[in-house]
Amino acid sequence: MCGIVGYVGPRDCSDVLVSALTKLEYRGYDSAGIAVFENNAIKVAKSKGRLTDLTKKMQKEGKPIGHAGIGHTRWATHGEPSDINSHPHSGKRVTLVHNGIIENYKEIKQFLMSNDRRGFLSDTDTEVVAQLLDFYYDGDPIRAIRKMLHEVRGSFALGIIFADRPDTVYAVRCESPLIVGQGSGEAFIASDVPAIIQYTKNYYLLDHGEIAVLKNGIASFCDLHGRMVEKELKTADWDEDSAEKGEYEHFMIKEIHEQPTAVKTTITPRIENGMPDLSECGITPDMLRGYQRIFIVACGTAMHAGMVGKYVIERLARVPVTVDMASEFRYRDPLLSEEDLVVIISQSGETADSKEALNLSKRLGAKTLAVVNVKGSSIAREADMVIYTHAGPEIAVASTKAYLVQLSVMYLLAFEMAYANGKLSEEECRRLTASLVATPAAIAKTIDDLVDDCQYISTKLITADSLLYIGRGLDYALSMEGSLKLKEISYIHSESYAAGELKHGTISLIVDGMPVIAVATQNTLLEKTVSNIKEVKSRGAMTIVVCDELSSIDPEAADYIIRVPRIEEVLMPMVAAIPLQLLAYYTSVNKGNDVDKPRNLAKSVTVE
Ligand code: AGP
Image 1 (tube, rainbow, N blue to C red):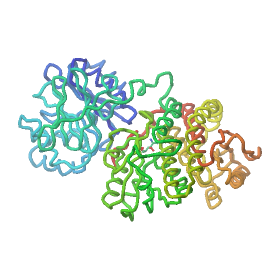
Image 2 (cartoon, rainbow, N blue to C red; image 1 turned 180 degrees about the vertical axis):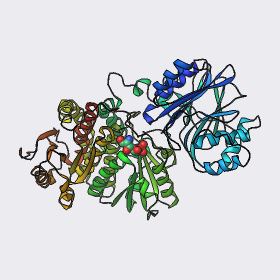
Image 3 (cartoon, helix red, strand yellow; image 1 turned 135 degrees about the horizontal axis):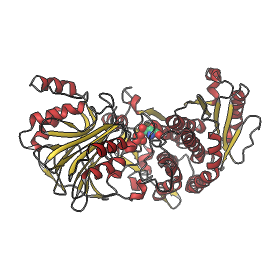
Image 4 (cartoon, protein in one colour; image 1 turned 180 degrees about the horizontal axis):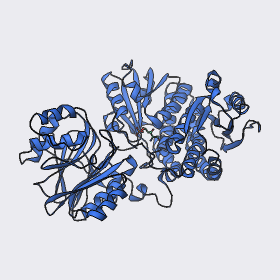
């Protein structure tokens, strides 16, 4: 969703803002803008479209020159993408950028209009906040911000400048993510660390309701009551290169290739003497023994990782698992008790629906466990326990490495829980754990072996209007992710379907040449899946079968066979995910789409 940046320091502020915004492009946006103090006056430049459109506009009309300012990439919510609706927005003496939603903006607008404030130019909720701040501004910025915070409802983050406070940037966080970077003699605000990593690795995490003041290159903080706050300076544990494409054409393919390392880095610290050990995350076998039911709640890809988790935990640990989309869970009045564990999976740790599902679970008394990639994110901080995945920054909107590390955590959890519950012997648990430890090598081999095949097979998909992904059991769980991956970046309609359910209706969709991608890695179900493949093949489908290297597939059933290494059956999604990611990637590339920033999508969905 929207990205916020801000800068105070000796560099050319406009250049810093645009460069930092470029690093937030992955969040998704449709317009961009900056505001900079130039000779003590605020100069604004904004434009619908990409950052390159903004840069072109500034080349034509003059770039603001100065050393303090704020910038923004907007993902439209209130009002269409347009120059006018782009941020920054201004009141008379206040200019600001905003990420999030102001829920009561209509009431505030009404209030302002009844107080003779009528000059609204845009359709945005943001401009209402700028006007409200201006209404309260009596020369004391902190007092005005605090008053504004008492009136405004919603989850949001703001970067603010006041016309009579040159070269000072203010920022406030209410739920939506915001960090404050501290360099040597310069300070930054940003929605996410990649924006500032080229300048500094040191940053502060703003807490809910905290206000930051960036002045003379130094950041200071106060709380909602105006009291000064001392904050812990954190250091990002990854370098500039991890947020760069390097030799790769797109972040997505770079991140696909990073998967062996990401999985290894995620599982290694959680294995002790060949056995799963989540104690570094505060999770003990005793705890795992105590849960009557498990709910896995997440969105999109993270929810699909939860589907794999369900199959594996139920199969091995014999504890019932329900998987819910966070957007449904939060409104379905779920039945939870203190004996239940709610697992929230999220790459960003900031997804609005997942965050609310977590809050609801806590209110209902369940224990909560977050599986999160971004350190210090809201979900990670608010859950009772957290298992961090160590994928490093994931920039491409289409999630790949975050999915695989989420799967690896599901396996660790399932193995330890199964052992704790006495459902898995020590020997079996050691064997499965050793197989998990071996997956990074198998993933690397799968990528190396399949790039060319998938590139070729993707050329058969680009003209399709629609396709199906089918599978049974774990293969079905994985096919959900394969289907999402393809549709989000290739814009081809696709559905995932349980293979055995096809003949109850969906098979009527099959027409000559329609691609059907069948995931058939579960040997215990192979025969049944192959029958389903034949059913669609005999009705004209073009079938692409993903199976292991040893399975014998009737050549008549498959137009194309993609073979992945045979590993432990329960772990097959760890390697079978690779061709699904590669097929989606190359289909998108072949269609000439913007692979890393697909239309209408945002990386981190921080509004409902
Ligand atoms: C998948 O490729 C998408 N990026 C999307 O489905 C994503 O997984 C979902 O929005 C959840 O995000 P989160 O993991 O950051 O909570």
